[in-house]
Length: 420
Image (cartoon, rainbow, N blue to C red; front, side):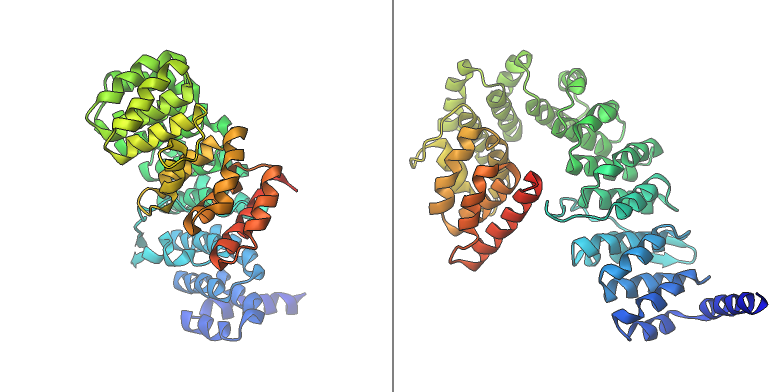
């Protein structure tokens, strides 16, 4: 027994004596050295533990998951941040180059890090994340060593579609830290659990403009109709132009016949984004009496965003012609535009939830341009059904290798979603 205790003490002393240089030396042995490298997470020296996380990420492979999870429980925020980025990187290779860990600067015991403005990353639907990874990140979002490490965990949960951590993200909103709250809200948008919508509705009046904007977007995306009265109040007396735009966009996502007049009034305002939200909102309400005014917007509008919105609305109302001047064709053609393809894709993803629209996309998928085939494959991955599988199988054998790869990727995502 004494020999065992002595051995453990010697081992602890050995680990604590190591430097980052020593960790790198061990890591040069390759993946077989992962268990040895992981031991340095026990070091008393923060810089050694930080280097341990870095080397584990470089070594890669499934065996780094467990030590990276241990890293999320570390007492140092930089170790937590880098471990979080490493877990995301396992499922989204290359993430560590742009994650929060890549911006960390340590000054004594304090660290500084800068979040990137880009927050639209998310894993493919067919990528399965280990439950213990989501659990660890959820715990970190609830109670990390710093607000930055908590916010970074929230961001990671969104990227990994961490459904099981929704309660942790909702708890993170209670921090009253603007960065944590913002990242939590965006993560909830990506996870898209409608039951979370009513739980964030109170934040649409938050005093921080960025948090308020994210909260308004979130209730819209999650279709939290409980927030409609608050959104109407914001439109009646907006704090600023951004709040007004966000509230109108969210209201347009939740079609309510009571809002027809309000939306119609925005069709003629100066702001082209507001005109586009008004047009798409009327399309979602789907009152045949509005088809004429939406048609005028489609024919007369000079700005791209409101014209796309009008095309989307007419598509929802059943205008599925593929002629050169048809609004449905206009949406599909826009998939070739680098500047506006994301807008057209989002509209078609939503419209394709209607069977008649989904069925109308198969012909363009077979006969479209290279970019159309790629974007339509992505649309079917999200909104397709079992009948879409043969079409994506054919696309996965396209003569263009990039089209074929996207078709196969979409096929995998669709099958994972349908569980077939």
